[in-house]
Amino acid sequence: MLEKGISHQDIARKLNRNQSTISRETARNTKYGKNYIPCHAHARYERITRKQRYKAPLKSPEIFLYVREHLRHPYYWSPEVISGRLKRESKSKLTITPECIYQYIYSKKAKRYKLWQYLPSGRKKRMIKKGRKVRNNGKAPNLPCL
Image (cartoon, helix red, strand yellow):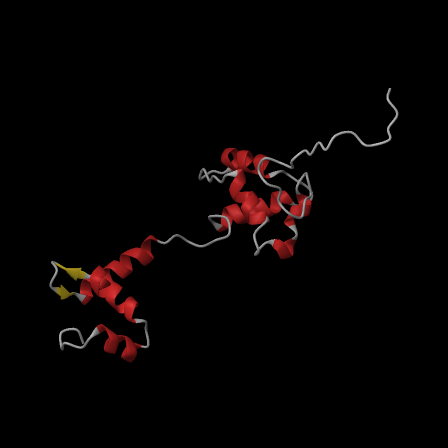
């Protein structure tokens, strides 16, 4: 359509897309400032989709199953212990950080499994990193002096 001289706006209407999407696509895949090259656009699309990693909750299914098993009964391991033991026990040297495990436990996907209850603290909501703030508003009134 670009070779026929059709404007971005008309192309967007025919493809039921936004005009800015069409102009970004043509700018991104125009080589040497002259023509839009569809084979370059498709090759770029293939390269990007190949690079995207597997979207498992915890990197890979093996790690996912290991974490879920060791969080629950009879182990009740903390994410720190799970992370350390996984490095030692896995034959293929699988690794995961404790922070990644915590993020999974408190994610929307895992809320229905209530994995937070297996943690040592057992908190339903995650606390901020620095912990709670200690407020000192002074002494309570009407206390006898010791």
